[in-house]
Image (cartoon, rainbow, N blue to C red; front, side):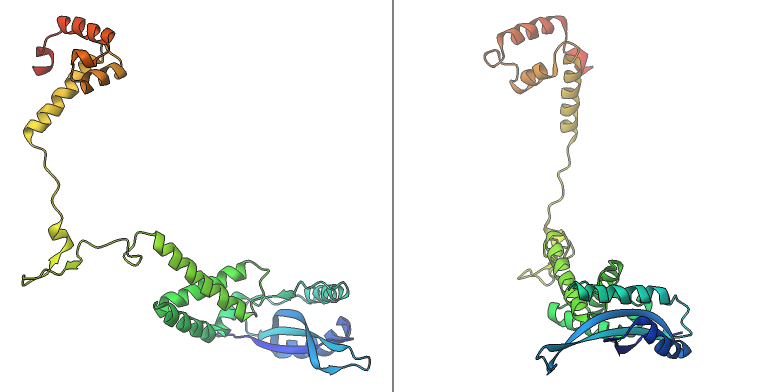
Length: 274
């Protein structure tokens, strides 16, 4: 069932909840479910009282949907409590809004056309696909709705948050290694090659990694065996000095050189060559 929201407005100046409920709720419940509301105050600049003060209108906007809607409706006790809270806030000049958002599925079903218009606007402004921008709008709606303290009837606020989210994604893309950020290039990217019938690809001009020959492997294996043999008598620091200084007497510390001479008298090259 494709349920959508309708809004009905009531001026509640000098009206208590019991009187309003007895006259209006029965009319509402004949065809509708009460699924959300917000209490607001509207300042009327065009009319003034006899004392010259600007008149305020206390307003209750209720969100209604068809009785066939299978979701939950607002409990009357909750509406009565928020009615009293709104009047209390007015007494102490507290600006915190008093509201309950309608269910998210009803909000999206009702505002789907508006979401698409926002996505089209963002798509043109940022040169992004409509589908990506629509995903941003819906993600923003769900995120704001989850906060509970955001009134979803403020469409301008929803639009601004969608706009900011696109900016955040663009900023993140600049730090991310992707082709969209310009920091990543595919190996299949074509490179214009003048004088050739066909363009080259980037992978065609990247040199292949050097392959180590057999002599290189034999040398590294020999060094590894020598180091393993030295470890039986020398510390890692001493071995590093011996290998890096190539065994020259004038470059080695005297004690280490004497120790190395004694070690060589006890060992043969056959221990690492055979």
